[in-house]
Image (cartoon, rainbow, N blue to C red; front, side, top):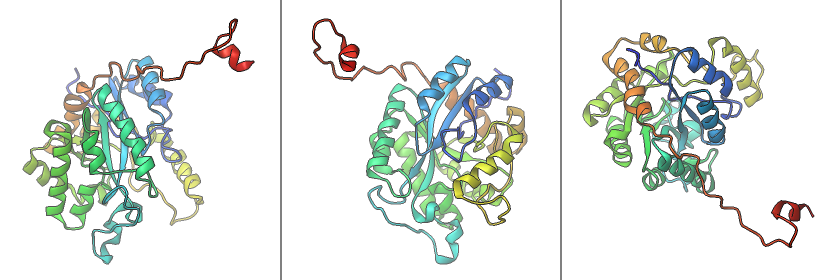
Length: 319
């Protein structure tokens, strides 16, 4: 194993519609070029690409880490109204989606975990839809077996509450999620794209990691494969929002580097102990624990029909 083990675990593919621009074939080619043995899929609020990703990864000799960037309701998933945790002057730091949801990165550790993730996300769509399909603590608790989770990106509940100055609430939330997933399956997620929102909660996240004895994991919030695709991704966001590139107020990504960086690039971002540990943990505590055996071995649940003599089901259907 390389002395700089690293796996990209927060990756938005082409299945994060009008948001992710990473084509699967390019992703796996890049992984092979960088000699990365694993890579994750964590599309926004959906698992539509899971089957395609899984089989293309295996064909490319890359171990797939199956996951999602889930939307979580700030209260119950059945409460379909905006929720704010902060004061009016803190609106830019408050619950994302205008009070509709926070974010959480979740991966399946094994077949049971993947099937639980399918079930949880399906129920999030049917029972928790408010602007996005939302899970909540109840769903996570019911389907936690075989899953690993994090504090999420800067729009996660824990980082949001830290930025609002609600440190006790942030610690409480992180502790509750740690209880749901299990101590060995819950991580404090940190990222750095050179922007304020990535770094303002860092001290609070490090305090929570110490108090809960929760390991760090470093992610890169990848939305495209190669650095030179940043402009194309920017255009994609304009299509999503119906904006023009010339509009200075359009939705765009601040900072830089939202691509599949090499392990060396990731380690070089920050020399702190927390960051270096978080880089190693992507492989040693997460990717290496993933067991893909049987993930897509399903029973055939299609009904069987009696057909007249001389026909099979296909020819009788055509008749």
